[in-house]
Length: 334
Image 1: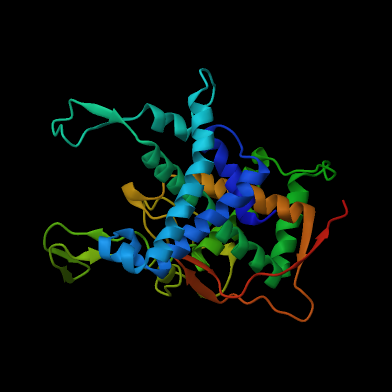
Image 2: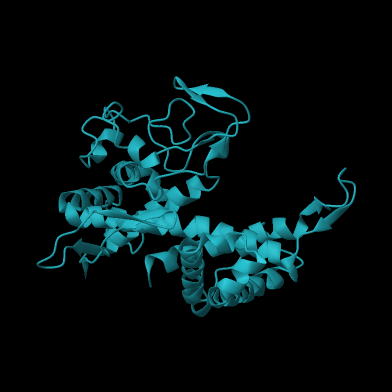
């Protein structure tokens, strides 16, 4: 099972209250990827005109077919959830089914309507995209780092053995164990610093002339944050191009690092402030849990005769490995 598929199935539970079955899950990430590829190849489809639909009718037809497939998959679980009368778990779909928004005709907001099926599908798709793609990408970077630097992988494994002293035969690293794995967390934070899944955030537009850092940003001007460069700034980080998890441990330069940026902003892989990613804590939990268990159960080694290439390339809005990550995986003997 691919990393993206595993993360997708984990994200499906808070979405709809159930984990999607293997047959459906295996096809949905590829649907998501296909949608992104279409938008990347031709941005004109995001705001289609009559002329655009005619000139690009083949791609437009392909896009509509993908959209229909996406609706069929997501609505299956939305409809199943809507028929449930009881449930202890409040999931994202529940909030969408209960949501009422003002109608366009009623500007004062007195008359409200439910979300349409198409709107629910779009919001669910956005939820799954945000919960799957960045996390799976970061997981691949982390495992690639551990293959390239086996001493880091060994330290992560030794830390887990120490925490589970007397329980070495246990099959799984549990969620309650993660808080004791400080080196594992440091490795993940260092990877997010060095290889954030996105190098740019959603841009912001100023509503009036603004002086920012000594520069005048005119009204309606847009601002973006270079997340990738922040993590490599020598004014902020000591020896920034070196992968050094110790900087996030006690006595390290970023030991008290705050992911929300409340005290200071040294890096912002999930954004910062009021508009930072609302699911950052869930993403970190998934990264810690899956990486811990992948290293606990398997030893990851470089393919003979090859080296791990950490070159980057941008794929839609995500920064992925330029060359696909390959590794030999060996079950550990406890």
